Image (cartoon, rainbow, N blue to C red; front, side):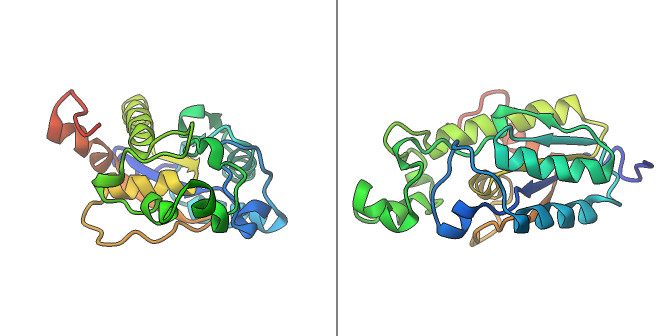
Length: 209
């Protein structure tokens, strides 16, 4: 496939297709939930978006819902997906499997509101025995640094998860006043300059952790 975007260091990040738990409003985290038929159609739609973007490398979270989505996309693009556990959803600990409507009952008043508040004051927040937002930010940022260096001359697509993408927007597009929920099958375009910008600002040490 001819790549007209080579040297542009473009990264297309998309969310996996719909699962039954997405429809139910149930927290998945690292639990293995398959995508629905609607999710498979969403994957096909993602592929149609990416088909003429010159994508050469397809990376994916190794969780089942992302793997299946990327497998569908890869067949259409003619690529072999590379699965990487570093791009998993945030680990929710005791929150995994809970309905969103139950979160405050289990973990305290306004917990869900604080979890979805991306003010840095809440970056250390985590579900019991789970990963904090700050810890996930470090995991994702470090992994993105790695892939932008490894595939610096190639256009890359990444299949990951909703909260991961939300935090990426928070980190790399700080000009956004509000960050709406990332929908299943949604695709966002980043430039590697944005992914690298945090390190350019703070030097070799990632001090925002």
